[in-house]
Length: 145
Image 1 (cartoon, rainbow, N blue to C red):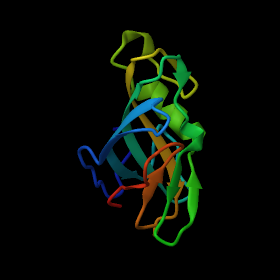
Image 2 (cartoon, rainbow, N blue to C red):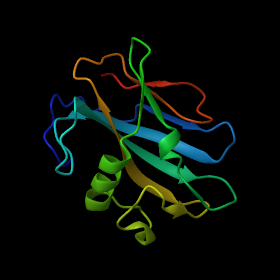
Image 3 (cartoon, helix red, strand yellow):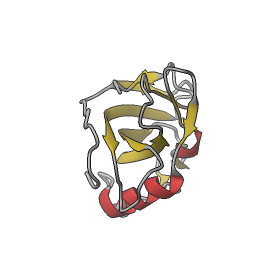
């Protein structure tokens, strides 16, 4: 991964589920802390979550990155860092389908397409007990950070 891990806490398959509307199958494959990402320095530390997402609906759609919420153990919610997420994606990530080289957060995925992607959050260095949730997720997913 780009950037310098502040305290890498990578895991394999934190969770796999379908959203309640059956629009997405989501597998969270890792969560890591980074002190920089794509040349960007956070105010605190970046939490980078890697996901495999499959569009399981019958329609083409973009993944709802902006609706994802990271929450710490104290109940403070953090929204994604769109600028950092997009910079990291455009430099590093790709879809299984060659059509998604240079993935962008507004990329529209065809029905059935699987894409490897990431989302970044800028959180205070002392934030702990982090969970990730999103629209239609059956429950918040503990990240082990």
